[in-house]
Image (tube, rainbow, N blue to C red; front, side, top):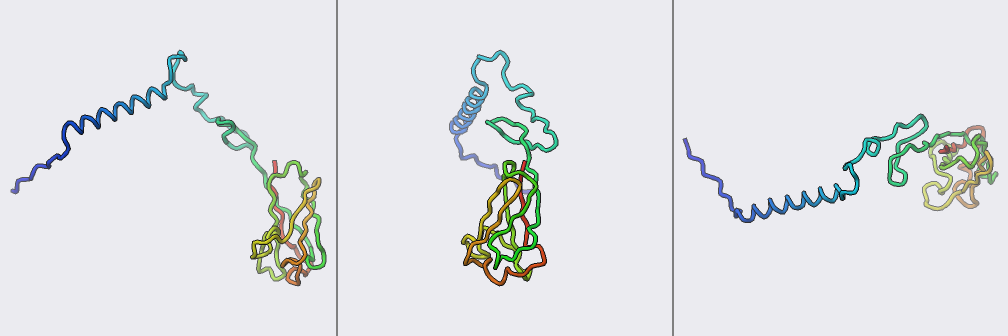
Amino acid sequence: MKKRKPIKNKLSKKFIFVIIILTLLIGVGIGVYAFGTSTPSTFGHSLGEIALPSCSEGQTLGITNGAWSCISSLNFKVVQIGDWNMDTSLSKNVNLGIDKSRIKIVTVLIVDDNNAQINNLLTDTWRPSVGGYYKLSGNNILLERLAGTDYDTSSYDQTGYNRGWVTIGYN
């Protein structure tokens, strides 16, 4: 049987002692900082400060002013745009059934005549330029395409089907 060679420790005892002392000092320093002063009679946190609130339906757990709280969740609704010849008609009015004061997010997706592309109205198909815009008024959204964009062509002039969708996030 072969004898094993002892593992040599190249660190000096003095160096190891200094590392241990520094680790203890840092640990005590963190503990003192977290513990605070002697002002409160009871140290630590109460369960109410640590426990998360129980949210009701339609609410989401979130942080408000640095504390956990229940906040209202957004509801989402998708509405069909309906028939719209974008080449000859500049705009389309769509009833959303939700008042504009409650709407927080709007996305408008447009389908071309061949159903080959679905694009955001705010962009001009694949280019990063503006293709149109929308205006909220009461329960309605006015969709409008801009002249000279891809939406102002024969690729968007057929009728008889749904031109796209408006998705809204509201509370």
